[in-house]
Length: 255
Image (cartoon, rainbow, N blue to C red; front, side, top):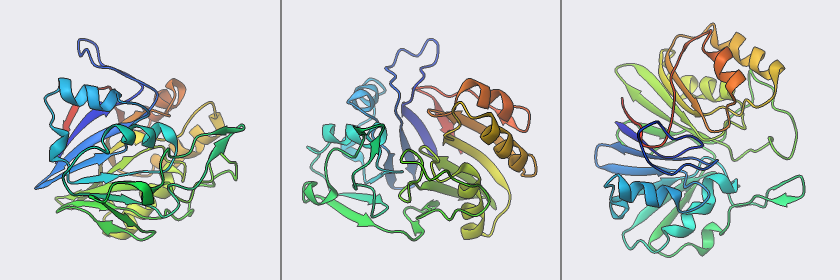
């Protein structure tokens, strides 16, 4: 599997791509070309073009959750003509607000063009040879505050399985990064974690940082790529319990 960072808060030195506080990854696994989230604007499209990536080859779009920094950019690719499966939790396009601001998905799934085949599910779903959509994440080991910003039942993630190891790809981890890990292990029946990449929703919350790091210290994780909604202090703390790598637009990670 190959994962390309099309959109993130950060860009990497000497890689002259655009960045914005949003997220979009391109995942290639076998015959499937999967767009995981679509950022906030056309940044991911412009970066893809500069990288020589042909989005007309997309076979699937997966939304991690319905916040507009992960979904609004889809407006820029609704003119694609090929058949594309769109995979998400059923609540992904429900209205969402934060401090009075509407941060919802900009278009309802039912209003997508007819060549976009909508698949909504709360259950785990295999979407390629080695990649799974994790479905609705159970809140098992990490408490999630019942705030309008965080308590999102539609927040999910992806799992990649290879050589009896799992890798996890997250959007924002509103459902709790520890809960996501537990769900991936439960579905796969595998405890060994190779890579975790994505947003961990660890922002200005020392207590949460400690709780997550305490949990992760008992896990066997090869590499973590925290990005998007993971602040510097969280990355520093995470680096004490596992190998933490930088993330930025233009990076390509081979699994």
